[in-house]
Image (cartoon, rainbow, N blue to C red; front, side):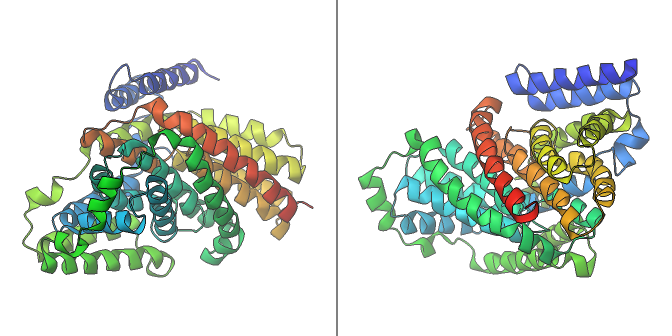
Length: 430
C-alpha cells in the first residue's frame, strides 16, 4: 500500500478509537476523520459527495430525513402513547414479555420496511412504555436495534445491503424469502431467548405500576384523530411504495421525502414542528462515516482486504462460503455494512462465476448477506439502525455508550453467525 493508504488507515482507526472510547463526541470524531481524509487526498470532493461507490450515500441520509419528519408529525397525534399502553397491557406489565413483544414487532416490521424506518417508529413507543413501567430504556432500545437488523435480513427491502446484493446478483424478492426467511425465523426465536439472559438485570417487575397500566384506556391517548388518520394514510402509502420498489423504481429516499412533503403540506402542522424531531447529529455522523469509509474504498484498502480473502479460498466453494460469512460479519462490525457490501459485491460476483455460476454457487450471495446483516449487530456503528437508535437515546437524555451496545452486540453476532454456519453448510454445501 502507498503512504497515503497507510495514513488513511491510521486516520480511520484513530477516529474509530475516539468513537469507541467516547473521548470526543462521535460527530466530532467522524467529521474530523472525514476532514483529514480530504486533507491528505485519500478522497476528494467529487468522490466524497457524488460517487455512488465511495461517497456519502445520500439515499440513506434523505431516507432518514424524510422518515424523521413523518415520525415528528405522528408524534403529535398521540399514537405512540396509544401503542405504548397497548403493548404494556398485552404484556401485562411483565418486563421480559414486553421486550419479546417489542422485538417481534420490530423484526416483523423490518422485513417489510427498511430497518432504519422501523426503529424510528418503534423508539418513541419504547420510551413511553418504559417510563410508564419505570424500566431502563437502554436494554429495550438495544434489543430492538438488533431485532431490526436480524428481521431486516429476511427480505430484499428489509436491509439496504440486501438491495445492493439483489442488484448485483440478479436476485428477486422471492429469492430472499425462500433462502433467508427460514433462517431468520429460527434466529429470532434464539434471540428472544438470548434476551432473557443478556438483559436479565433490567427486568424489574412492579405490580403496582402494572396494575396502573392495566387500568388505562389506550384510546384516550389519541390527541388528534384527524391528524392521525392523515398521517397513517401517508405512512401506508410510503410503506406500500417501499415494498413496490422493484415495480415503481422510486428510491426509498425519494418516497420518504415525498411522503414527508405531502404530510406537512396537507396538514396544519407547521414546518418548525415537523422538523423538530429530526436527528441532525445522527445525519451528520453518517455523512462523516461515509466519507471516511469511502476514502478507504477510493484508495483500494477495502478492495485489497476483500480480494485477499477471496484468493485465500483457492476455488473451493465451501471454504469460500465460510470465509465470506465470517469475514463479512467481522468487517461489518467495524465498517458500516452498506459501503462494505457495495465494495464486496463485485468480488462475490466474480467468485460465483468462477464456481460455475449456477444455483449452487449462489450460496456465496447468501453468505455475504447473512454475514453483513448479522455482523452489523456487533458494534454501535456496524449498522444504520444502531446509529439511529443511539442518536435517539442521546436526544432523549438516556445516552447509550459505544461499549454498552457492543458488549451485547458481540454476543448476539457470534451466536447468530455461528447458527448460520450449519444452515449454509447443510442446505447448500452437502
